[in-house]
Each structure stands twice: as structure tokens, then as C-alpha cells.
Amino acid sequence: MTRTPPHLCADMAELRPQIDEIDAALIDLLVERSGYIDRAAEIKATAGLPACIADRVEEVVANVRRHASARGLDPDLTERIWRQLIDWSIAREEARLGTGPAQVSGAQPASPAGSTSKAPAR
Ligand SMILES: C=C(O[C@@H]1C=C(C(=O)O)C=C[C@H]1O)C(=O)O
Image (cartoon, protein in one colour):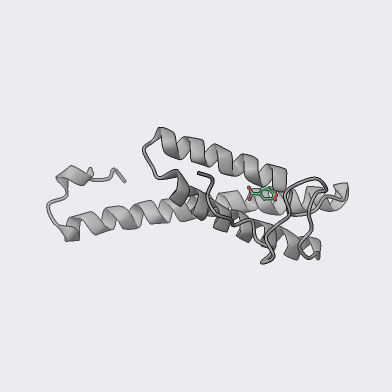
């Protein structure tokens, strides 16, 4: 479906379905991403790797901050969203690995809440 550009949306009745369509597309991408998270858990089970690999978490966050900045999107908001997504992904992996929170040695420890969330870099 070709979306109506924002500036051509005459009213909220025309605008909201465009947002709904984008949200559905985002869900499709999250479902696709979770398939790779599930495969990561399978690979890690064989390789003896933990779900949470903090260096990779920070690499992913740096990547999305860079993409956000390049597109004029608030990088701090983007980081908060992605850290939630990554926390969810780690929990999904841990459920499949049958493990609790674990860290790769030498990486930044996870916050006490076991999440990757922390104050955005300034
Ligand atoms: C997918 C991985 O597993 C975890 C999930 C990540 C993610 O959702 O981007 C990143 C790092 C890992 O803690 C990975 O190790 O690459």
C-alpha cells in the first residue's frame, strides 16, 4: 500500500491509518528480528555463549544512535527504545538457553536490574 505523505493528510482520519500501517510494518520487522534472536540462542547454546554480550549491546546501540543522528531522529530516545528491545531480546535468548543474566567477562556489568538500560551517553 502506498502511504499518503504527511503533508497531504487533510485530517486525522486520513493521517492515523498511515501511522497504523507503519506500526504494522514495524511489528513485521520486530518479528523478523526475533527470528534471528532465536537462532542466536541456538548458536550460543552450542558455543557456550551467554545471552547478554555487553560489547555487542554497545555496538548495536552505537549503530542505531548513528543512524538516528544521520536521519534527524533524537539519538537519546532511539537509545532508550533499543535498550528496551535488546533487554527483551536477551530475555528471549535466556528463556531458550535456560539461563539467567550472565555477562561476557571484561564487559561493562549489566545494571542491577539485569538490563542494559543506562543513562544515554552525552
Ligand atoms: C543477538 C545477540 O544476542 C544479544 C542480543 C542483542 C540484540 O538484541 O541486538 C545484542 C547482543 C546480545 O546481548 C548477539 O550476541 O549478537
